[in-house]
Image (cartoon, rainbow, N blue to C red; front, side, top):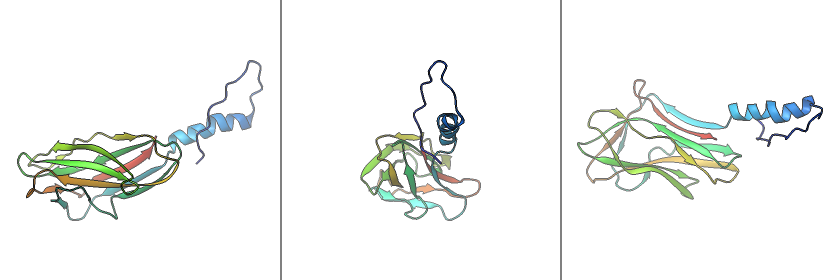
Length: 165
């Protein structure tokens, strides 16, 4: 995949050549439709049990993504079915480059007693340097003695992803 090229400003009566069209149209369309993506989709395994009131990586192997970016902008998403104790809340965030930057969905996300898809919208992160970055999912419960259950089964897949935008 090529990097984005600022499109050419064409002049009246300028000859349009195949190489110019390839750079300014074909390659830019390729960039738009083939942006770098890193993702983890888990459809089996024991559910994750989060009991810590401090931020902690959920899974340092399967929920730690690496992505090489050129634009400095990414969108981060999490789709997961979760449940917990009556009235509990939890925090969800992403650690970028081992804590050099942290982006959060919030620290008071309400959760249902019954298994429910977590209501987290994608995060847009800007200002990253061009190059390789790591993204780790971190969670915490807000009340000691409670448990947040994060499911990962065929009927309740866990999806964590990062896309360059």
